[in-house]
Image 1 (cartoon, rainbow, N blue to C red):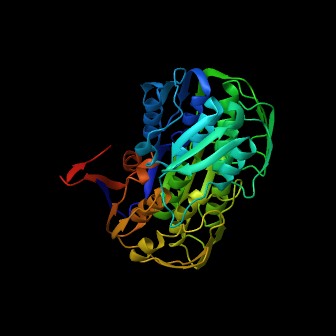
Image 2 (image 1 turned 120 degrees about the horizontal axis):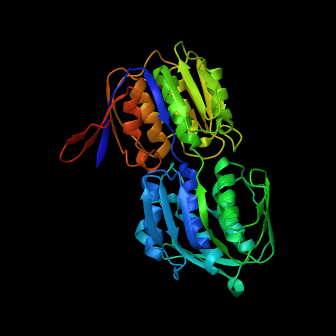
Image 3 (image 1 turned 180 degrees about the horizontal axis):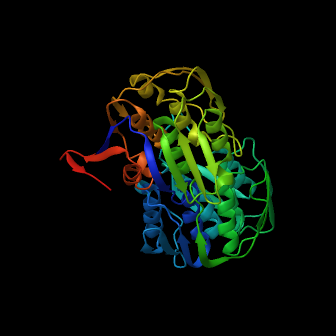
Length: 430
């Protein structure tokens, strides 16, 4: 196991290169199952979730070639099985995307119940099941596996209206529908950038998807998809996390390899708090020298403030003057990290879906724990801003979604090291 040791209280200066989007990669890699031919995928983030998905595809019979740190070739031509490895799927939430991809390819799928982050409650897949059922699949859960099978061997296009906006269901049903017979219309669809990225990937392989990025997506089914080359978009949440780190710790950092439009909702909130953000073609210059101001934040589906940035922005607000309100409008049970921040001297009270944050003068280093991916990022931000040393455990969650986070932070002046236990061997990176 690994833990991070951070000596906080240092402002951050320099440049950070943003990796490919985790939330896009974990759907695009399973989507390669739909193709017959070689998919060359570029700007792939080096994170544990990607490693696990590539292992799952190899177990299914795919040929995987890693060309360099961020480019991989996937050939799923010879895959014959629609049953995934139980142990591997248990380790990753995004394994549910294999259901839509395998259904689209084979008309059947048998995927172990997904694992990944736990927010204190079950994240349901009822909207996924609703979509698959509308396309003509029977779906059951038996022996820890989700089993889906298309009546007659091939899905049929349908009109699908999601009861709630669901990113996962939108992407999963979109994958299943690209090879369905006829036209599928998905209404009340999610609009996040990684949904557009998945649609663009599938279209580049021969799919016919229109309307991704709006609340209505139309898909004309095709008989098969072929291979090709595609580059994943930059990671909106990774970029936002480094922006929040500068806001909390102070300093000036150039965030490189981003799409500024994707950052608008995060940029707007940081500016409200007194953080300077200068926007350029594919970079953002983030600067914080003065005091932080209070603000209110509510997470909403895109283009609203992302739920995946809620723990990070709450951490920044612990250092803002006055009382701020943070309301979680997407996932219940996402405040498990609050006790860790309070252990560092924060003053946060959670009432149902709202956190009341009373700003404090400073945080103090302490032993803290990451409970999930984004809460883990919040712990890193808190430790960077705190006075004294912090020890963060549970960092395997952080490494699910942040490539080379220790290396990147050290390059902008953070005093952070990874300690590998039980041998207590220290790795200093950078």
